[in-house]
Length: 346
Ligand code: FES
Ligand SMILES: [Fe+2]
Image 1 (tube, protein in one colour):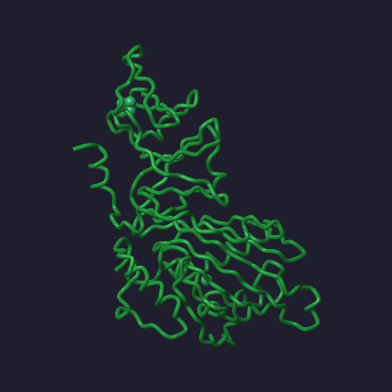
Image 2 (cartoon, protein in one colour; image 1 turned 30 degrees about the vertical axis):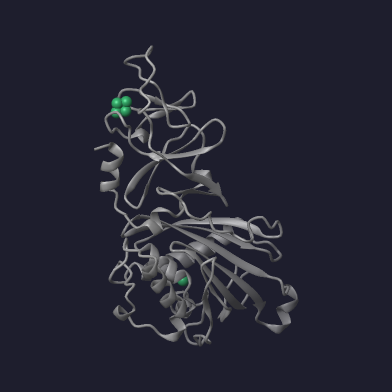
């Protein structure tokens, strides 16, 4: 039995829909050259590193020789040096030196276990399978009229419950009272549409009132349009209309605030949410203002989402109660079930 077989038997997730997808495991800024960064994706321990070319590599955090953790080693002369017997692996994952036999070429089988990895939108994306689709498109990323701010990381227990919460406007007045909604005057949620498209689940706009809906700290009427690209990647584009008629000259009909949300399932009950916000209004908020507001909102979310039971989200719709205002959540759960996802669900 090969090490690779043993690893796949030990790995927590066997769902092809998740294995063959891209998952964010770090911000690009987490990975400077010369650093070995251990990360865990669905119980599989990986090591990330950046070679001299600037390219990122994602390998199993395990040396094929005797199973030591490569992340405990170091990078020297653009090779990863195993901390145990000093085997050196180049940026292709090939062992190029066995110090116990420096004049013999290493065996062909002496290779790191490498995985597809890409750097996009300031995130590092890894797949431990064979990706069937490219990374979802973040529509504002290449649009220079949008200021982009990365926020997080935010820790949640269930990754799916974090995603579902991100796409649920009816909790705003309660979880985010005074920020994203008004406790004493919660917005009714008008019927909206959810369509399953090539891109994922896409909604029509949902209207809500927000006393502090964006980092400008002015009350707005917000129209949310959600897309759930993948089981663990979601997005909204929020159209902003300044609420007080006498302040409306401060805004513009093109004003938008968007969030691209990614979730790394570390295991079935531990997840890391990393987001990138994109906004195009003036005056531009400072990075600190954007982060301060997001930190408040995601801490409020985690305070409730992490109390939900069962921790693993039920995909059988009979197991919780669904209202028509939860249409996106219902469709999301059904979609997970249709994809055959069993990891982290109930
Ligand atoms: S375990 Fe890595 S060199 Fe021996
Ligand atoms: Fe929330």
